[in-house]
Image (cartoon, rainbow, N blue to C red):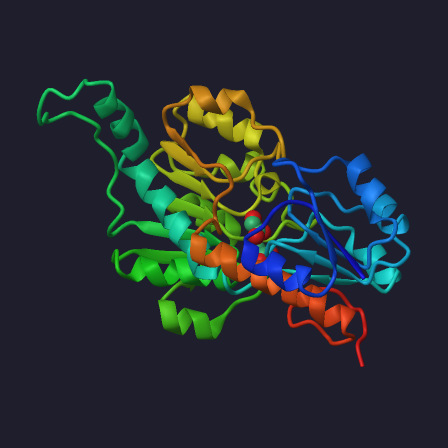
Length: 322
Ligand code: GLV
Ligand code: GLV
């Protein structure tokens, strides 16, 4: 059987596949083009792909033997799930292992923008430090402030737990209220508008779906306090990025920290590079050595399970297994 892997992932996962199947790995250190995927997928039984690959109906139709699409990510908005399900193709993701790792990054970004760490680092390296100064690099306190969490799934909850240590008031918005989580973390459920209006820090943890696309629209963003910050480690398309840039440029809000962008996989709006009040990261939410290794094992195991006729642990669509 043949497995197509669209980009090199940690060896641990690749070894599991190589031991069992003909494993074809993209030899280039870049996203495969659609033409390249189409050229390789025709006789593949399994596809291990990334969130940077758009797996649409055309690709699915071109792969008559395909039984599983194993996405090396927790989000799977890059896959045409409806079409895959229609063709009886199992779709899987890698949840769980990246929950705490992504929550760590959301906090790292929040702290970095609040306390101007990247700006301070550049300042030091430019040799501009002339000793302690009363007015140098003044940022905002984090402790004791109000944190607004949009999307209270596993990652949102992991972010809320960390907020306890900073003595923060935590507001959240989610499709459903989560009473157990409220008890554990002390987070309070509020409508989205109220969260936008009251939070000092807003962090996004929703999957990208038709409901969450442009969820933070111009109108929603305009509700933010002038002293507030926005952190996004979810998906760029959940925010009206163009308007956010306007607000950052005019000082309408104090700052933002972004790990995801509207123009992904390949483009970032270059206007962001000119703003000092934004911290940028290259989509590294799950990027720890430990987590990426675990994701590789999970994604490989999903391929093996399906090809052996077993129900994979992290099935995200309605394909039936005995
Ligand atoms: C990362 O963005 C993921 O969905 O795993
Ligand atoms: C966001 O609030 C969601 O979970 O839909």
